[in-house]
Image (tube, rainbow, N blue to C red; front, side):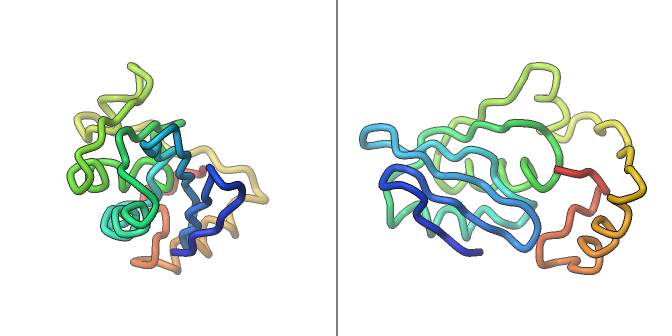
Length: 127
């Protein structure tokens, strides 16, 4: 995972597939999206150098955006915020709808799946 300072208060966390952002809000950090599952330790370590993550805001439930949310929250003590209709999917209580790919997206998804444990969206959902 790469950490790139975009602005003094905004850092991009770039994963092999997907990205997240750390936003400094006063003394606290807000994590916007949480990357794929298995990203929590890397997020917590990177965030620790910048401050304390108080909240994780998820833009939508796709695996490359929300997969690392529970792990990151457990490691940092952050609150996870998601849309009420997507919260059960984020919590793993119900499956999300199946992906609907356009023709041009199929090769991109195939490449992401080949990346496997390096952060591919194993559910086939696009970010």
